[in-house]
Image (cartoon, rainbow, N blue to C red; front, side, top):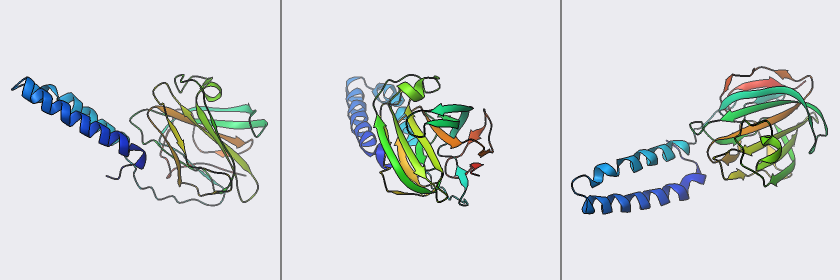
Length: 216
C-alpha cells in the first residue's frame, strides 16, 4: 500500500513512541503489559490506513469535472460566491470522514490563476458556515475554454492542517493531486450556472476517477 508523504513524520513519531511505551509496559507490568499496549497498535494501523494514497487513473475529456475527493455529496445548490468569482454559482460540497482517502485532486484541467490560504475556526465540516469561517484554502483554475472553477479545502472539527500544493500559473490536470487534508474535512466546488451535474446529495464520490459533471 502506497502512503502519502504528509504522513511520514506522524507515522515515524507514532512508531517510536508506541514502541517505547510497549517496551516500558512489558517490563513494568508483566505479563500483561504488551496486552495493555495493544490499543496503541490498533491506532497505529488506523493512522497507516488514513495516510494511504492509492493510485488513480483518470479518464477525462476537456470539459469533464472529476470528483476531487472520496466522500459524500452534502450540498448541491445555487449560491453567490463572494471571494473571487463574485457571481451566482452551483456549489457542490463533498464531506469526508476520517475513513476516506484524504488526498485532494484537481477537478478540471487548466491554469491555476488564484491560490490562497485562509486561517479560521474548526467548526464541524458539514456546518453551513464552515466554508466561510473555517480554516480553508481557495484555488481557482481557468479551463482551456476560459471557464473559471473555484474549489476549497475546508478543515473540520478534527482536521488541524490543510496542505495545498497549488500555486498561481501551475498547470492543473484533472485527477492529479494538489493537496491533502488531515482527518475529517470537506471540499467545496463552485461551478458556472448551467453546468451539467451528474451526482445528487447523498451520493458517494470516488476522487480522481468519477465524473461528477460536465462544463458547458
